[in-house]
Length: 236
Ligand code: MN
Image (tube, rainbow, N blue to C red):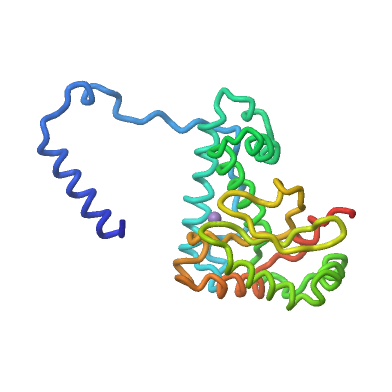
């Protein structure tokens, strides 16, 4: 529903409610909905101001993405795990357990909470343009060059059908590009997530409309925190 249609719908619904006869049972019910359960999962703070990724990612996109989409996964997850063994697990443990249990709602919300925790920490306003150290060596060994790695990542992101993620992962002593669908990520295939680019439409549509690969290229070229990406390497 567009904003305008949504507003009309709300106005129409409100008008209808105002003229409808009051329903006595509902009228006596408490006005306030019960508060969303607190914890155990809390969204970490955004490591930069919402406007600082512009023009690569606009402030409005970051505000909605962090404040509504990412935040919503914790709200959902905290509701879903109440009084279940998941409540005492880490996000990583839940992702693996919920996958085995085929509990899709828990899996998707935990997966998305975790994916986005990585995502925000891997972005940096005016980030360094190139990685260094061991990460640079491994990129060169696995792809030939940084440019080739970025090119493959951009191309791969264009092939994600619907919502998902494109990742740079470590698999033993090699790096590789991996696409995952929906809320899935590298954890479930036993690979180490080094860098994840969100290619759900909410991540880029306000700024790039349908040009997903332009978005991914701009992110890779301008706002990657390569120090954080490199720090995720495991001894192979
Ligand atoms: Mn997202």
